[in-house]
Image (tube, rainbow, N blue to C red; front, side):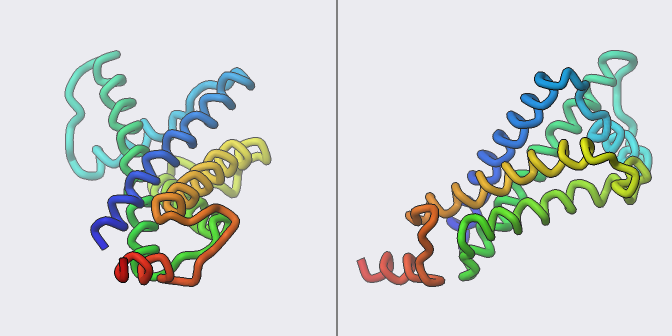
Length: 172
């Protein structure tokens, strides 16, 4: 099980890299600024926890931005690890189904805290806002689920029965 979690974490790191690349392509293509929600989330969480963020001016702003980015990376790796654990427990959906599951859970997991903290309200998002969130998370899900399948020796588009690969490995 630990190996499955580790493979999931590595897949989540690959997915996070893909999510970031798609996000930066969108920023470059449309000329839009980076989202301020990760930094605002850090500010609100620190305030609620009663923890000060050291520094002043640009130094403090840079720290907040860095922590926001690190929280995003940690979320992506943790979601991948959770998916790896599910696969280790025998839940091995086809890659596209797994990608949808991973993308939906990760998107909900990243947006729910921002909604809870009053930072964002998806009910007010435009279609462009939704696309800017859904597309990178869909790519994250696809890369994460695909990498997990590849780490387990599965070929995308073909699905072995649950646990079939594991049974073959134990005999060998």
